[in-house]
Image 1 (cartoon, rainbow, N blue to C red):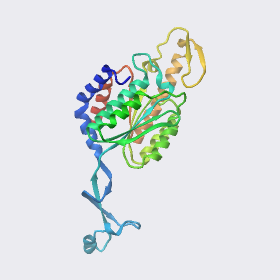
Image 2: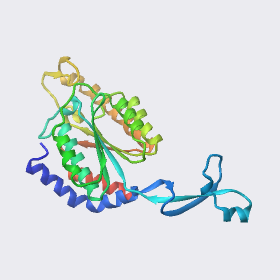
Image 3: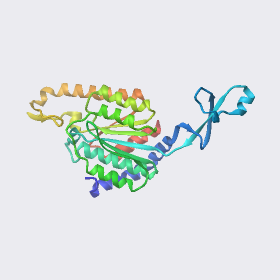
Image 4: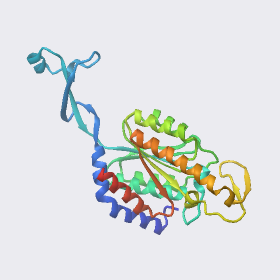
Length: 291
């Protein structure tokens, strides 16, 4: 799917259009909030029990008779983790691309841009658990491996976004950039708790909610049989009778996720699959730059 000329051309166009804004975004993430001992002095702070003696600034002690330790700021390459939902609900499509295919294009484009910056990129495929994990690497050939995983992703019947987020938050120890690509169908509170787990560990988090236009507008008119993508149930429904309630609940669900992300300092972006990837991603990156 990702190897066809049209998709590769789309990724190539994205590289050209988003390069300038993405350079600014990524360079802003390169400076680590943690302090090491190798590059540039950052600040003093008062000594607390447990600090290493070798970090004490004895010159300051001589002047003030108080113990202060030196902290340093180090330049570090960014480590990015792309978390892609491969559950069956992501296979829905009303246009040329399913949600899963669209999300895979976004992931491939982001991986390309990050690797251009010599940042390390990892990939996680998940449904109700982590199914595939490629640790972050920064070598160009790593993109081939990421692309192969995206092309070979097999949908699974169930998803549990919240549990997967908790699992990965425990696994990823070093601060990095977490990018989640999912329709986020599940319990909103559990998903938000998983996202907060990443923030608690001081990760930068971006959530791309991938949705189909049908899910946003529920345009069905005639008597329709709806089949569950993550269970076996089928319902014959008059869409006109349920449309208003469906839209109310769907919008409330999305609003709860968006509000929870904003309050936690997480970037939340809704991406309908009928929107060109380059335009959607460039618009987001440009907006982030302005902030």
